[in-house]
Length: 166
Image (tube, rainbow, N blue to C red):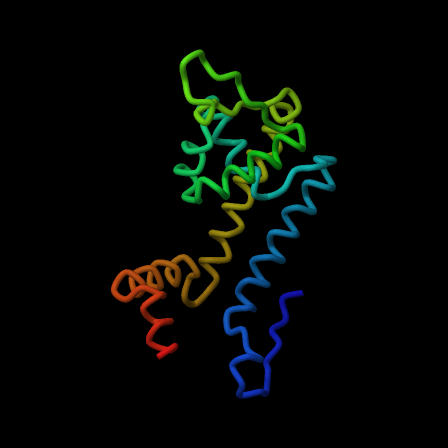
């Protein structure tokens, strides 16, 4: 599951240099999702857990507030909220008279409130396991992310792409 495949080809079209990073993170995500299935938490996806915990901790939130909190686009959070609504995990409060319908707060359903203790326990366990892995690495992934962000701050990825396209 975590095995890296190397291509002998020199053609960059046959390459995906960071594919292995995505694959390993995807495998971890699948293992977390497997815990939900074992616990009988059908319909819960890993991307739902952070927003559900936030709504539980801080009360109903708008899509914009959730997007800002989780540092994702409004569109991405809107799609996540729609999927959570379909799964019966959130509900939208009616808009107050005279307010924009786009600012309606998203709240938990009875079903998601029942799941919260398990989801919070899983989140804490995941954070501990990730920190444990980070500590075992000779160069922690969290440090790689910080270093990568610093490099991209100095010279954005789009600039790097344009340099290679010319």
